[in-house]
Length: 137
Image 1 (cartoon, one colour):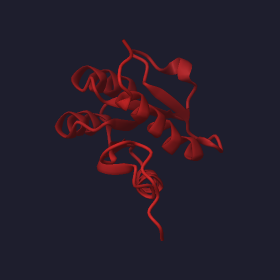
Image 2 (cartoon, helix red, strand yellow):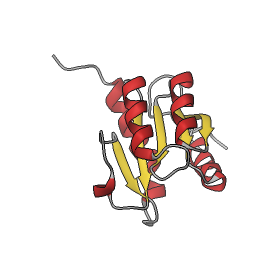
Image 3 (cartoon, rainbow, N blue to C red):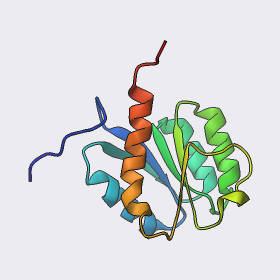
Image 4 (cartoon, rainbow, N blue to C red):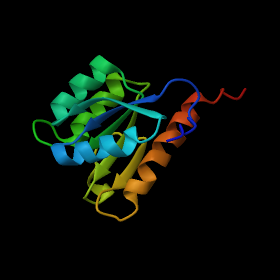
């Protein structure tokens, strides 16, 4: 199989997966690691673990389920944004976004809609390219 071009300049974009469903995390890992653009650097099974791993690993992006045990997604999102200011957070939720409290994520996708899996890699690439573009003066 021929290598796919990496649309993100430089090394792969480092992603942390945070969801309490292990089979869902496995599916996300397979989806992302199918591209040379991404490297999954860790998996967290609850909100507290997501914060701890984000601080330790300093990934480029965290894919964060908003409904998890030990610490809800709203609290985890706020802590990740405050402790990892250079990390983008993509929130996943089966609930309406009006229920999200606190700081907004950098991007959000609603689980259960048919197209979200197709949109996720593109969304991460867009966030990555936005971060790597030179600042305009």
